[in-house]
Amino acid sequence: MNQGITVHGPREWSEAQRRAETYLRVLSGRLGSAEEQLLAQALITAREQHRADPAAHPVTLAMESLFALLPAEGPSPPVAMTPPIQRVTMLPEKTEFPFHDGLRQLFHTQLLPFAGAR
Image (cartoon, rainbow, N blue to C red):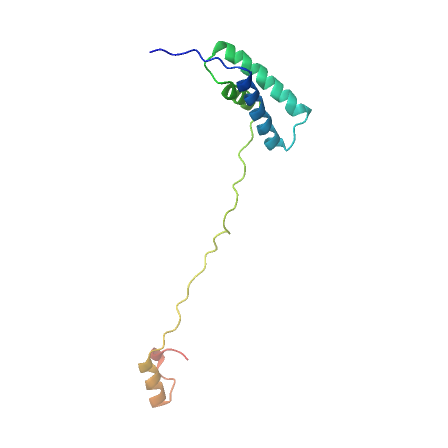
């Protein structure tokens, strides 16, 4: 197996810097002095790791270094997607059959409890 030695030039390192800058802008909304210091430290760490492992891609090393420097966030609260479930009871409606209605009209009385209420 012939494995070529991959040499990463300035183009790959500028891509790594650009992606790390973009991530920090999205994360904090701006790229201030604190973010620039994080970016510089991440790139320094990535270059040191690249000396130890020249086959690793600069973008991967820069992003891993940046993630190691960023403070770990706690778990975020879940986003409510639907309204909360409310339990309700379903009461059956009284059923009126034509036979019962006919009996009621025939006898003109409400004494037939099995015929349902009107």
